[in-house]
Length: 228
Image 1 (tube, one colour):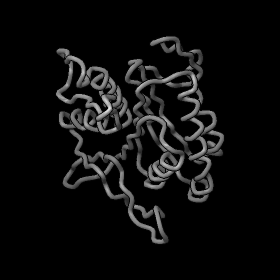
Image 2 (cartoon, one colour):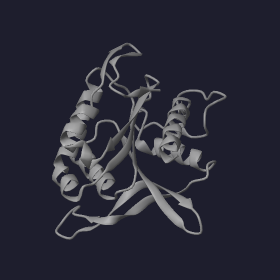
Image 3 (cartoon, helix red, strand yellow):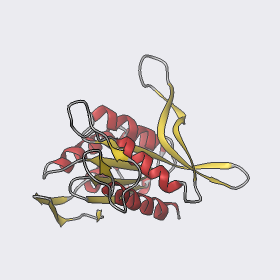
Image 4 (cartoon, helix red, strand yellow):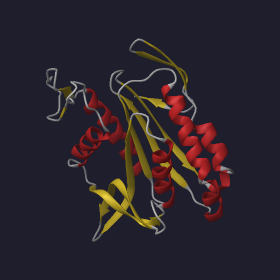
């Protein structure tokens, strides 16, 4: 089943990223060949690209095919006045005499601007195939996920009329990964028109009660989020 496969790929991607070495450190027996580089200012440079490469390395051993920077089926008003195709970070395909696109994956890192999240949520909604959002964080405190969740709620609210007008279903696996804490969580956003308002669904979905002390993350109420 596609969702089960995506969950396992996300879990394994998190495990691979937790084993990754940085250029100032030393690899372990589990470390992949990919390492985290440093900037001119001697700071580690961490981005969503590490996550995408680890994700793809896992796909190379599975039955799915994939494409990167995949042109979307729908057109979008990105800049200017002319609607045009956007790009999905990664797309999964099955093959049975022909290729069939079965999922779009978006990768994000840190705390991106609201508009960046909104645009990618729009793609995942409008392409009308299952989606996967993999979000890479270097570290977190008690306010990190609530701040991000607010941006996701806003984004779904922005497209509530689109969803209701066309009776869209929305299936997106969300996974948040924290490098320094070696902690992650995932949950399936599975909305159908019969459930009512996607606004209410998003507000209920994006909630997780937790606290952070040192390197330990304590979940008080998981609200359906599965901790990795």
